[in-house]
Image 1: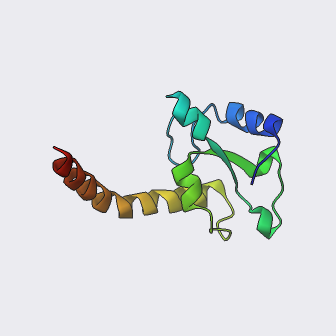
Image 2: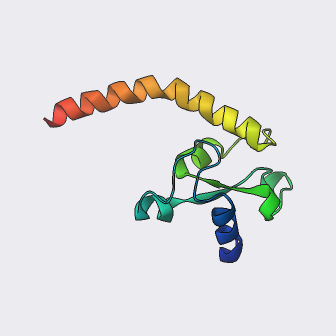
Image 3: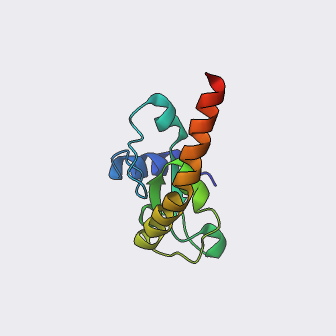
Length: 105
């Protein structure tokens, strides 16, 4: 869902370019900045509004993980969900990347 560019910018500035869920610096590169998204804490589909209070800055990975998590209604709940999911996925990811890099040598 797209939000008004002025509101997107206000969210980005309020959150100082940092993903509110994982802490990645979205000002670290132009690619990171360009891919930054805003997340509706209370989903629009569940009655959430396009307001500064309901929006947080999010990296694409975190926003993607949260796309079907309407039951998580606070930033803290959503942050804990992302942390748990990242932890669960990390080992498999790191093994797969090591294997890929080995294949590319």
